[in-house]
Length: 132
Image 1 (tube, rainbow, N blue to C red):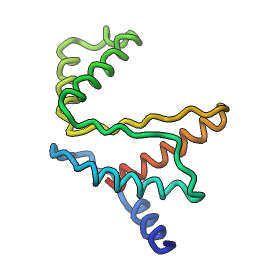
Image 2 (cartoon, helix red, strand yellow):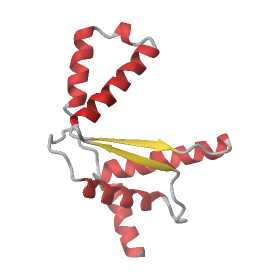
Image 3 (cartoon, rainbow, N blue to C red):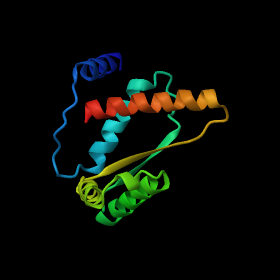
Image 4 (cartoon, one colour):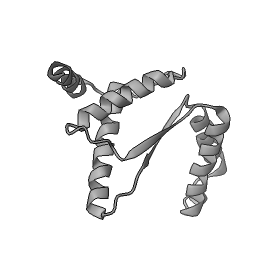
C-alpha cells in the first residue's frame, strides 16, 4: 500500500496539464477509477470527502446544464456584457464537451470545517485533473 501511494504521489507531482482534449467520451468506469485514486491522494486518514459527483453525458442533460450556466450569467447581470453571438458560440462549445463532472459539496456545521472540506475537494480535483 505504501508503494502504491508513493507511486501515485510521484505520478501526480511529475504530471502536467494538457489543454487539448479528445471529443470521445470517457467511460464512467474510468472516471470513477480516477476519482478514487485522486481521493486517496488527499485523504490519509481514510475520512470520506463530504461531496458527491454527478456525471453528465447525455445531450439533453448537457443542454439543461448549459441553460443553468447561462441563467447564472443573467442573474449576475453578466449576460448584458456577452453579445448574443458570443453567448450562442459559448453554448455550442459547452454542449460539445463530451461529459461534465459536477461536484456537490455537503455543507458542514461550521464555516471553518466547510472551508477545510472545500480545500480538500479542490486538492482532490486537482489530482483528478492530473491523473486524467
